[in-house]
Image (cartoon, rainbow, N blue to C red; front, side, top):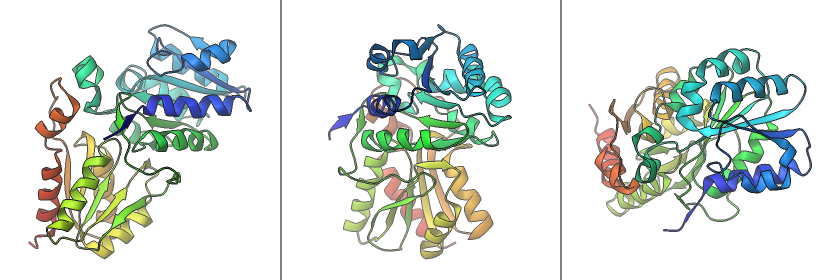
Length: 313
């Protein structure tokens, strides 16, 4: 399967927007190279503020710039940004509702092959979901990351964009739309079961849908690219049709997309939802595909969870 970099795609989109909007500026805590923002810095050297390894300072500077009408974007590794600068995001960005964009790199286990457990992050979505007013986008591939970055800049207020390691599978054909705040049905064979998936393991969800179909189970696959605000009406509609689902994410079992799906089921249409994610463990380092298989996110795991969700209790 072809892989492309969500980091490069998102930064390309931001660089294109910056040519028309001089208010766009990047704040980097020693992350220009990691974010693939070197071309942006070459074109706009005066619009990159490098603060060194100081994520808290980066967020504070971004907050200050936002109060003047600038459009700051803070780029860093997902965990360094959402954990080291958590209080700064909460108090100086989210609380006043400032127009600061946050880009987190190495979301999930995909970074484990190159940089290890200190640089692969699976708590970030849960942290950001808990902050009032912060919106969260987790695109499925590079093309979607490009569109998501452009959409992010049109949304007022704080937005967290979760990106990967730079080697994400390309899963959707060219021209696939992206709509902020809406789920999208990727493919539907029927309403036996729903698969809700987010982020860079979408290729596995697609393969699981096809395997289920070949085994006589006609399901629907849903891309949850905007985790917050979740398209609750859209999710509830899918659950009304299927009455059962599996939610798949490369994130901690607690607080992520699958938690959000269960909250919708609880409020709007009680349904059996089987959740696949990291079950309160810290994964080891290793090749991304092997890690996903080892920690319960294989294609067969998705298939088995879907079948289990269909069993009436």
